[in-house]
Amino acid sequence: MKKIKKIVALALSSTLVISSLLLGGCSSKQVDNSAQKLAADGKKEVALNIFQFKVEIAKELEEAAKAYSAEHPGVTINIQTVGGGDDYGAALRAKMQSGEEPAIFNIGGPQDVKDWQPRLADLSKEPWVSKAVEGVLPGVTVDNKVYGMPFALEGYGFIYNKGIFEAAGIDTKAIKDYASLEAAVKKLDNKIKANELKDKYPKLEAVFEMPAKETWITGLHTSNAVLSQEFNSALDAFAAKKVDFKHGDALKALYDLQANYSPNAKSKGKLNAIDYATQVGQGLAIERVAIIQQGNWVYNDVQKIDAKVAEQLDILPIPIKGVKEDSIPVGVPMYWAVNNKVSPEQQAAAKDFLNWLYTSEKGKDYVVNKFFFIPPFKGYENFQPKDSLGAAVNRYAQEGKSLPWVFMGYPTGWGMDVLGQEVQKYLAGEVEWDEAIKTAQAKWEKARKEKK
Image (tube, rainbow, N blue to C red; front, side, top):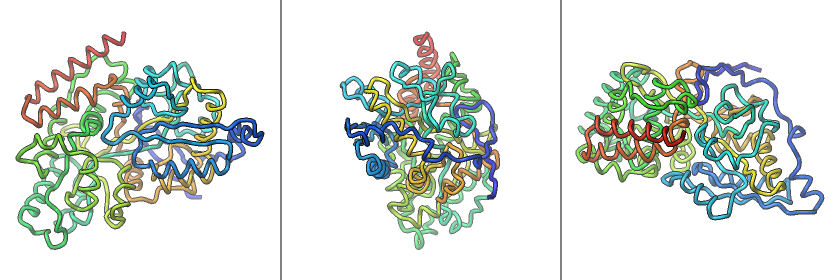
């Protein structure tokens, strides 16, 4: 079997790591069968509630849950999805306070582990732990105890439609830094405005769509590309008492490029009303725009609208002007956590379901072929990503052109509620860039002092 080595810079690893994905598998016999035994004994029905954030896989996750319940008739799984334009963190806190605590929920990196520590079950003895790709567990490990199961490996950058660029006569292989990206954007913009692409792409109206309403995109993802040059890992960011914005001008350039070549270039404040659905489903998927800043997770949404467009997608780097200009951030988006406050039977069922999902053959098929995840575990030799964006992330990883995800180490709420909102004010002309940065810096320092 052909060996593939992936070099992946993870949010939770301070250096690039090389992981062989062909080492051993996890057979269904290794999975803890506590929930199955409960059902077989017929002594107790188990209701398993899951509260998760990944809207892109909501339907497919429900299908996987039904498949699991068919094999484990004593277990009923109820799934509630909150994400996209909604604040999952705030929704989770409200859910916990309501008294209807889920058995499975999602956490980010070290900051979330600290915030939710009283409710996190120890997962250290689960079968999947030994199968985890190197570097994905440090940020959810405290005192040698593992408190989170990684969702997937994901990468994000500037997703673009190859057909549009080809029609415009632009060679994307030559785009390797900010200068070449900016030149390509200007060329494409001129052709769009001159209606040169109208016959083939009648809906095309701008190069970018920038969803500034989604502060998780601007405040977390865009900033991460730049702050990954200031912090080596999420753990490094988590320990930092201040943020210097050493490359603040490069961050400004990324925001400006997207805003200046969007449909709202002349009225940037309107970008604050643009959401994920407008950017992806009503933008890239219908070829109204040529580029969006997003990750491989959008493939499923685009494919549901137009499979041909989905296969035309690829990823350009997010170039950090003057620093790292040919790479994309690659890391773990979130982790599954098991609530130690629910009954022992529910905890057992929760652990069993997660094991089944990532280690059984049927579960692996859902993970790779229906969720379109890049698995964070070994033993997926027969389940390699086939979608265009998963392949693109793999390409960057294999070439060592990846940046760590450090935003999981930001102070709680800082990325979305502070920096993301300052970016909105900047776009609306309410504050100057330097003022926005100073406010974000001050609130980072204040949050760190309050957490002492």
